[in-house]
Image (tube, rainbow, N blue to C red):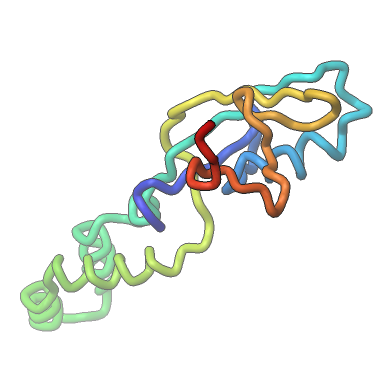
Amino acid sequence: MSDDERLFGLPGAEQLHREPAEVWESDIEPHLDEYDQEAWDIEEWTVSAARTHLPSAERVIDWILSTFDDVDEYGYDAFDNASRESEVESMLEAWASRVTYRMAHTLVATHRLTLVDEQPFLDGEPLYVPSGVDTSDEGQVEP
């Protein structure tokens, strides 16, 4: 997961998408006949780091130590002395790297999706660029 990864969705949506086009394709277009409007707000969110959904290394160590009901004090002390937060932190980072879901964190923008001649536009620009169309300035010839 990159720091600039974003999620997009309609306001109040429980499930968000990786691209604004997915909001159009999944949440708006299939239900066009139910809407009495031609414009929708699409929210853009940052993604919270998966690590924030896991306990702290200190809490994991405390929990493990609290389960040592049948261990004598030498066993308890041996684990307490051997456990290092940095080692547990490495384990938690490995777990976080396996998280496949994404959670919205901070709302950073609200975009406007509108229909122009029945085609979706996002913030005044076509949502889809037809294939084979050069959108860069490099293909332009100066008059």
